[in-house]
Length: 158
Length: 333
Image (cartoon, each protein chain N blue to C red):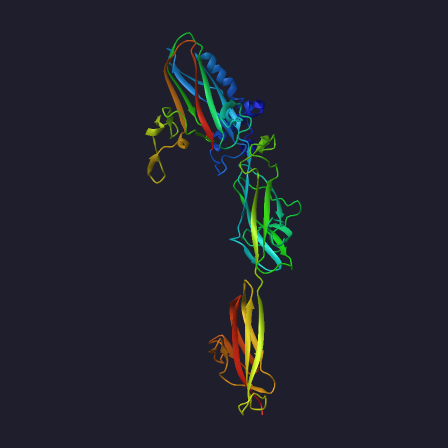
């Protein structure tokens, strides 16, 4: 397991003191993770997939980015919206939930992918594709005290 | 590309780490190759939530997870020769292209194999050279000959390099024989089965992983021997003034020169010259090629004559053809 070398936490040291402070002040806590999808073929030729720590990843590999949320407060929270900008080095996987709310223009407009268009430099428009997605977003009307859940999206390394 | 090293030295104050990360996130957008994002690219993911806890809107960030893209080792070699190269005993050049199909900088070790199954004969590999001046043609003394073990410079992701394999066709090679030469390129970091991993040997200390090409590739260049020979056969017919065939003063001698080209190739600039024999005089206007008269003047057709002899320029002649040249002289009194 080489997780410690892959998750370059030290680089982000500046962010670490800030995030827990927010999390402790507010009711909601977010905990992100990433897993690689590994496909194995057994003796009978049947393919199986499993989630493993992303020890070795290269273009074309599939990653699952996940965020666990917890309402650690004593009151329900409302209008819980989780926004996740896609790292530029990945594209939303083609088999992502088609009902996922996404943006293809940096978070300015939102919708399911099938309703969005992309405007080219020459002014022409085309239907948006998975590779155009810049953000994904989940909206929950309310989260009860003690409630936990998980949000995730699949991505392919460009 | 090592984004961190490029950026960090320019930032010396306490904000360096914060700035470096925000710039990194943007820089990651740039590299996009056929082979995918560059090795060493950091993929960072952070989710942000907003909600209302009854006391007003709140914001919370998740921790940021970071994974580094590892180095994919992939290479292809292709022959740039449009087909078998027509050749003859002596030196020949085969041209190949090596492409780094991986996503990181990598050098490749090159091996030329002249002993390919099915060869009618094997060439001798003298050297492997790189197209230093980038003109696609081997230039002796200009294009760098690689020292053993022949290894390319480090090629960036997607970079291509033209490589020449310099061989000698042996004198024993005969017309229409063929010979193949293979060029093999193998990633210096290592090759193997797709998925094989070389821990810590990728960009920025990441891992290197063998891609679908196995991190080695082979291409074949072909040689086709075309040996073309020219035989000139000269004959004479004599007609004497008395209706006989004696060579006496006043006899007319018709010389016929057959230019016989044999072999699978062709010859260029085939020029036939013949001097008039001593004590004879050319009969003006008697020069012919393949039965058709040629003028004695130069420049208007393939043939010309002067005081000393005839010249006929046959140009490029394919193997398997014979052309006859005739002219008359009289034996001097």
